[in-house]
Length: 333
Image (tube, rainbow, N blue to C red; front, side):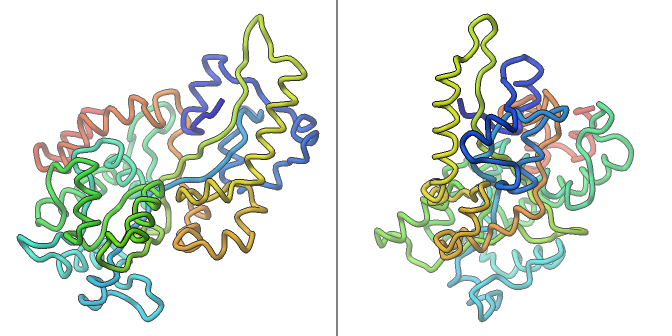
């Protein structure tokens, strides 16, 4: 089965997942040294490997090269400039925004998962922790969370980013040239590639790792992975296990096909291959694997979790100016 690493704690706690042994991996020529360390570490629980990572996916900053060049924010190398530091980023958004015509940044402000991913990125860049000792935002983590939420709310209140905009509309604003930047997952890279190939994208585009807005680089990440069900009373047979392992190994060794979907392979021989290194913009933004911030290790965190519900119900209204950030975040505790 496939499984998000962010939900690994739930799968383990419900006794759903069967751990792998080093010998089983070795039987198909795999080992931990084949994988990006951050993904390999997150695939473990209590010292046991419960999943084999296929990719590391994250949010990235997509940009309209034509609009950035016009605003003096495109370097000679074709990469954005002036985006480091939240104040500089805000100044760039102000410069790129033409009221009534173009937003500086398009984000899905009416989509809880998108809000969570940006919020968690900002929190991690401040060395903040969402969960600590089974408590939500204890100590100065609350202040860091308020800072992150207010930063997004600032984009909306100034009109640099659209208010209460759906996921699909946020993409359309960017692809139609009505937004200079957009923040979304790597999984939207095929959207840009296909539109450009069909001649339906009226500008040159690129994508890079999320800028360093606070103290250091960090970006929300998750991984698709392969796992084997722990079937109580009906364990997977030796023959089926061998077949599973064969498929897992094949999928990893051929994950350049999955990379075409925007993802960064977790299997290092592919990530380091010439085929991936020449794949653009994937190889450019793949630098985020050095500073991944995986969701908190908890049964209440990860994709489709209560934490994502909280982002929809509490953080998202604060970003759209419907409630103060402090009040919204305190309701999470």
